[in-house]
Length: 77
Image (tube, rainbow, N blue to C red; front, side):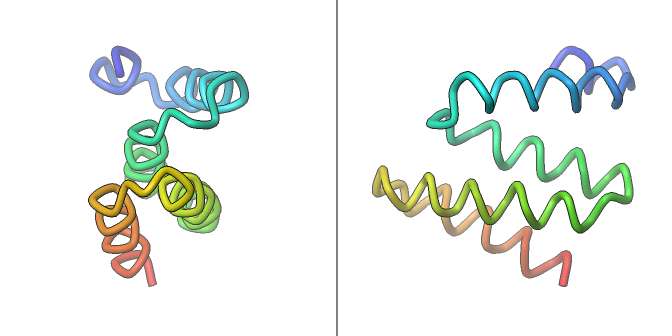
């Protein structure tokens, strides 16, 4: 989040990749990462991350997170 707030998108992307590799069950990261990728004009990567996040959130029964990520995914098209 710090990297995102300072505008260092490459570092933020790297940190999200490491975070999700080590903690795939950390659901909030998928939405934040997807939002970052959309802002960085990387829609295909955002779709992949959000789809993975939706599946992970579904496993945990986190319908709120599922709906947030599905809404962003729909916005991407």
